[in-house]
Length: 356
Image (cartoon, rainbow, N blue to C red; front, top):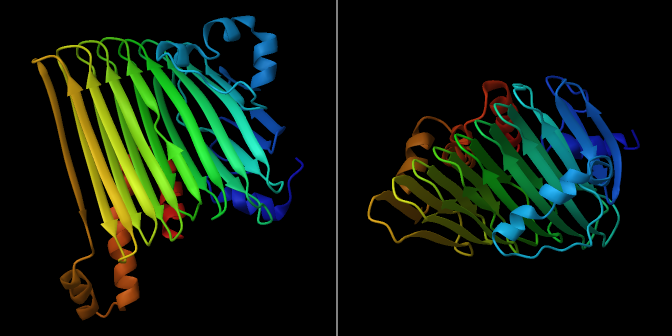
């Protein structure tokens, strides 16, 4: 593997286990070059996207760009690299597939197109990390990802961003979920970044399909993060829950959440909470609910505030230094439990959060 020890440490910070303990497969792309792929668990395919399109013509015909057409959206076609992950029918694995999109070159524009297919009755966890080398400057990352969850399929997708303060990021993703399928999407951004703009969309096409989105965002001075999630309830008995936690140490955060009910007999809930640590911080919480039907249950709650002085004083009275008391309150606010991960993966994510 063409990657140095220092670079491996960066990968570890976004959940990548180079020893592949308790992993079902791995993928690494550095700049525009795919430098490592391995499938460990039978019934899982992991390929560079170009190879998948070459080996399986039906991928281009049925999946490549199909989700964008459903929304009448165009997508940039000048991409280089990306991953193709397919979980075959009936395959279930608790161990996650791991992927990393890594930028090393200065002023590099990384533009990738990923496709994830979870076939009928299949189940998988995917943890993907995006990060940069120490020497990287003024880079840009565009990540196009299309998710297809077939009937009774289950996908838990956790994306961890660890960028630098001069990096601009623009993920574009769309998921299509069929009957009784479940899509769980988790997003974590804990380090300084110049700009992130993302508003992924999930379409619950199949009856009784479900979507759950959770995001944990920390914003630092000179950071701009416009991060949201949208779900379209297109069939009866579908349901969606979108939860976000945002903390500003001086950066600007916009948390968007939108649920649109295009069918009766559906449920949806939004929850946006923000915590401002100092006066320079700005948080906008923008929850939206939309429907033309009466027989729906849609709700939202939003709250933005600061750490209460009495909470700091209470912990200080127990002998905890004020700075540590504040850190404890922040970690409690982040609450990794909202991600709904299996126990061993939850422990890994908690280790990442503890380092902030």
